[in-house]
Image (tube, rainbow, N blue to C red; front, side, top):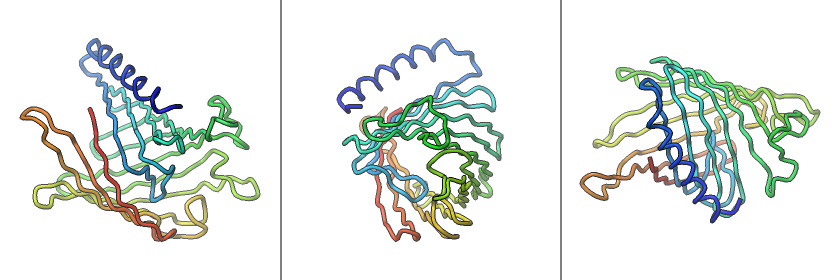
Length: 238
């Protein structure tokens, strides 16, 4: 989709959701945001060749959240739309994702094509221990269980798995997060056990007026498996 058409469309959708949110039940929340990201990264791997616009829409009621997240490179080199449902408790989160990653010009990328031999859908199940204030350490486990992108050369599902250890703290009054991600066996991430994601991220705000500031974050990521290093920056609008 052309970027000049995409930005007004995202703005219109957010405006409609803002009006809709006013009529939601008191225990139901509508979360929406747009991230402007210098480089799209996922578990130590990058997609596209340009900065991305990444909108999120979520409907949260009780412990359940359903949402949609997108990523659109400004040069049309990459696009992605993820649908997900989450179940949250104070310490744990369980989530099912449908990663829809159409090819350029949507060639052989029909959304309702779920044939695992050629579909561009990829299904992922995750479980996460979120940690707490006294012990801010998280543990996440993920397994890809359906989709052509996770097939090996013989056409068999690899069930590629990913584990991530996380930690967060404050340094000089700023929030920092740290992550170590690895794949335990041969799969989509690497052809053997390997660390694929080492990340540090700092969160801050840019004050524009006395009543308005922009959330920003900057991060450095290294993928030891591919020996690639990334420095990223993002601005969030809510």
